[in-house]
Image 1 (cartoon, rainbow, N blue to C red):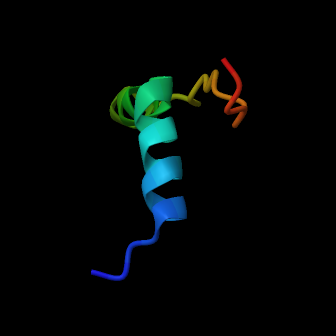
Image 2: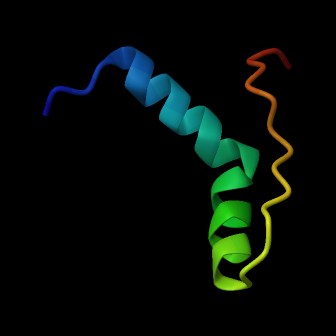
Length: 43
């Protein structure tokens, strides 16, 4: 399917962050999203 380990890593990071759900909720509520994830992979 062409996915790399890096793709899988960052997809998992995004899912764990809660920002995916926030993005969908913001879209449905027609408001700006309040993303909390900063991309850090540390603890």
